Image (cartoon, rainbow, N blue to C red):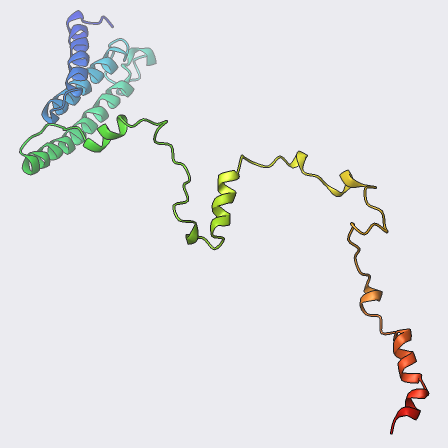
Length: 206
C-alpha cells in the first residue's frame, strides 16, 4: 500500500490540533479536539492496515494473500461508533454547564489551589493534649506523652537472667513469696496451746 502524503499530513495536523484543543478550558473546544483525535486515530489504523486487496469475500479462485485484511476495517467502524457515543456525552455536559453557569469554561477549584499552596512541612499533624482532664488518667497521660522519646527497644529491657545471683535467699531487700503451705497452715502456735492448757488459769477462775 502506498501511503498518500496528503492523508499523512492531514493525520498529523489532526493529532496536533486535537491535543491543543483538548488543553483548552472551553468545553466546546474540548469536544472538537476529541473529534479531531478520533479521526486522526482512524487514519492511523487505516495506514497500518497493509496493502489493498480484494474484498474479504470467499472466492475459490483467489489466494489468501490476495484479500484485504478486514480486521482494521472493523476496528475503524468500532472506533467511529465509540467516538460518536462519547461526543454525545460531552455535548450533554456542555449543555448542562451552559444552563447552570451560562458558560462552558472550566474554572479553577479554590480548594485545589489552596491544597497546592500548603506547606507540607508546616502542616504536619502533631499530637497536642489540650485538656488532660478529658482522659481517665488526667495529668499522668499528658506527662507520659511529653516525656516519650520513641519506641522502646526490647533488646535494652532488663530480664530476670540479667540479675541472676544479685539477690540472696535471706536478703531482706529481696521480697520472698509465701508458699502455699505457709498460707494455709492450720497448726496452732505454741503460745496459743500454752494459753489454753495452763491449769493455773482454771484455779484463778471464780
